[in-house]
Image (cartoon, rainbow, N blue to C red):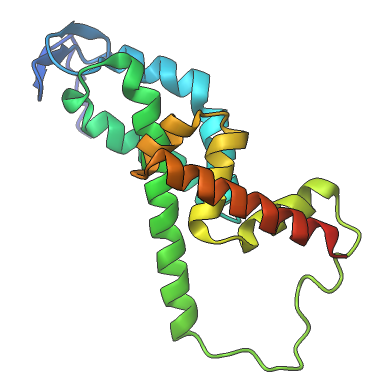
Length: 195
């Protein structure tokens, strides 16, 4: 039997893209360009829940929402050297969550097109859920809206962003944000009023 002695571990400085150096513990040593890992860690702790709720309004299952938010943090971590202002980290994360949610929905739509069509007499899952909580009815009604209307309403009224912030995040004009919000709220009211 061979017994191997474990080598002693000592902190080693590892150069990282963007002139940010770390020791093996992950602590930030210097940051000449980009957002530090400490800022990302603090953002993760403070905003993970709100980003997860944002994803849950755009997607329909918890696992996908968690995957989208985790992937968003991974992508921001990878690209942190490009972020020059720490206060824009949350906006960048929100944009990444929205974009990844769109991609997830696109993949699902393509998958559904490739699957066989259900039989017309098969019972839907919504038939037995008439007496669902008001929140579930609202979320379901939100999901029935057009994609842009849903995104604008969620970002404007749930994430509590200004019209200008929503416009910047989605790459729209402020007037378009107002129009999508107005039409979306009207459609949402109509859906909520129908039994």
